[in-house]
Image 1 (cartoon, rainbow, N blue to C red):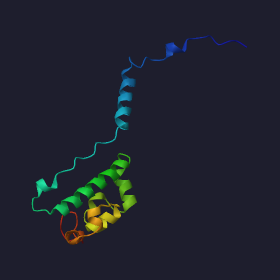
Image 2 (image 1 turned 90 degrees about the horizontal axis):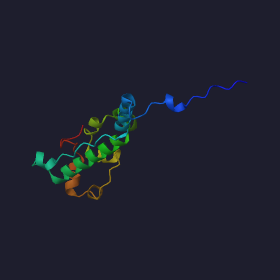
Image 3 (image 1 turned 45 degrees about the horizontal axis):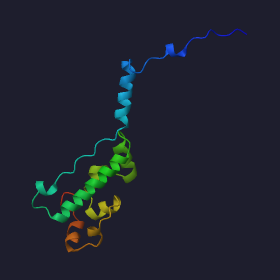
Image 4 (image 1 turned 90 degrees about the vertical axis):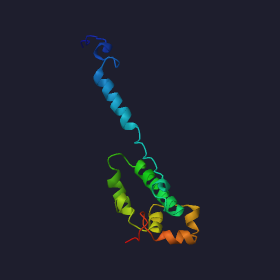
Length: 133
């Protein structure tokens, strides 16, 4: 049997530092692997001064839990997978009563678990402070 002519395999490879296409592919892969930045938590008391501190705390806990859940899901499929898991869009959850939202999103907070008088007052309100449907 004839031997194949030996050719250095190095000559067929492109130096990664000299290839603009390879460099571009590496940059795209690096940015795709980075998680999306979490949205900044707005200060509710600064926006609405007549909102009770309990309501502001409830909204902050809901927003934090929603962002945690969405961050754990793959980018681009977050809303679809959220809807499959919870049966509704993230915006639709905010129309439910706060006590329902806490149960659905599995939010546990000491202040809401004992349900003081002020907590009972906001438990039947929705995210925006109105009576839930």
